[in-house]
Image (cartoon, rainbow, N blue to C red; front, side):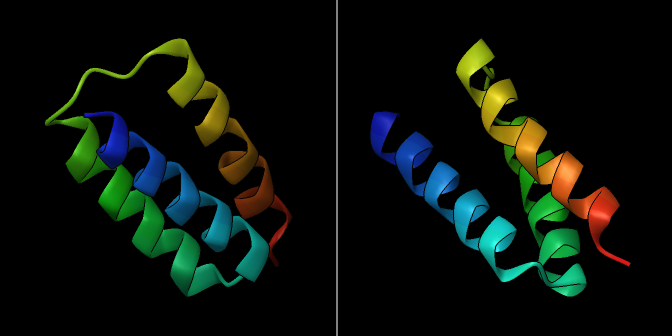
Length: 59
């Protein structure tokens, strides 16, 4: 499980850095699909928050 978590957070980080609207949309799709399979802890929610803020800033 830990390996999967680390990969997911790295994927989120790459998406945030890219600042690409299409990539953000893809990450949201992957996130919701993945969330349905796993229980998220507070650390995940903290990892997701920067993505939400970033997606609001993208024009």
